[in-house]
Amino acid sequence: MRVKTLIATSDTAYTNHISGYISEHHSDAIEISVCNSVESLREMLRARRYDVALMDAQLIKEVDFDCVKLPMLLWSEQETTDISIVPNRIIKHRRISKTVSTVLENYAMVSGKIDIASDKKSNITAVWSASGGVGKTTVALACAAAAVSQEKEVFYLNLESFSSTAAYFPESSKSISAVFEMLETDAGNTKMFIQGICAQRNGIKYLAPPENYEDICILTAENIRELVSCCADISDELIIDMSCNCDSRTKQVFELADKVLLTIDNTETAGHKLAQFISQSNVYESFKDKITFVANKGAVQTAAISENFISLPYIESPDTQYVYKALALHI
Image (cartoon, rainbow, N blue to C red; front, top):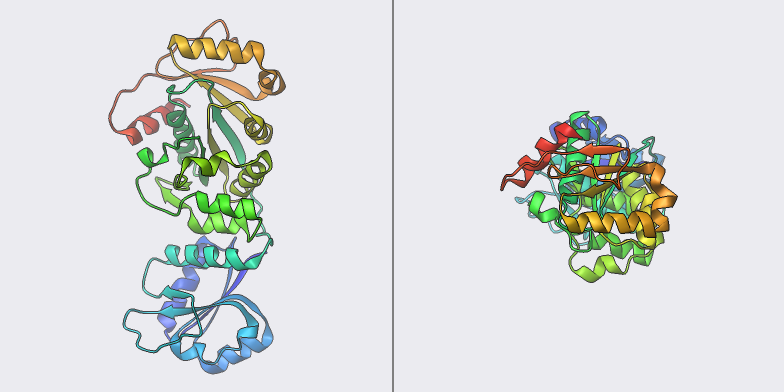
């Protein structure tokens, strides 16, 4: 199901521009209709119901709100008319991508558990390590950058206990904690909400870090399943950057993943922890067919690694984006 969205304003240049952009870039999520007069608005509302309607102050007065689930005022900073009956407003002259995000975010909160039709079959790659500090996040983002270079739609999902997302993506967006709240309360459409609030940099979509540590700690394995499934449905390539824990949530991600990149470096600690994971954990035995070992920072193959091995060079730079983009050439 796509969000049936009506844009009603007498500004024909605006409706032509925004409808063209949405049809070209967001047709998988939004079905767009436009009208420019009171007469056409009345006719369209008699003919069908709309999920969302963006209307200017003059036309919104003519709306039967029973025909629209989420009416929103298309508002400009020069607007003087007070339309207090419509609490939701969208600024007219701003980036259309921001308007689309706001529509999806707001409608997700009132739509209930409907689904957005998706023909995507995302490839899911989980990046994990038994040891911290081995460059797991850099490897995950290198995978994401490599997929972007192949013109794939990429989503980076950080599930670390302490997220490092902000070090790589400084742009602000709504915290992933808002998604966790939806998962916990089972209210609204999580997939649509994620589409609405995710940010994008260098072709990689992502969510801002949790507001606090406890937010991610209370997620259940079932919460993780729904979260991963939602992100996979809106991307071609989903890269999951995982915590070093090895619990039921880790097993859930491994089960959903098509490939697991198990990352180590050349430190003795990482080698010992890898050996323990292989010899003492049934997780390795259950998912070893999915695992590819990634020796990061110039690490060499060890006795514990017999096959499915990738060696990445050591790249030293204070620029985190430069490092993962350079490593993408070796993934």
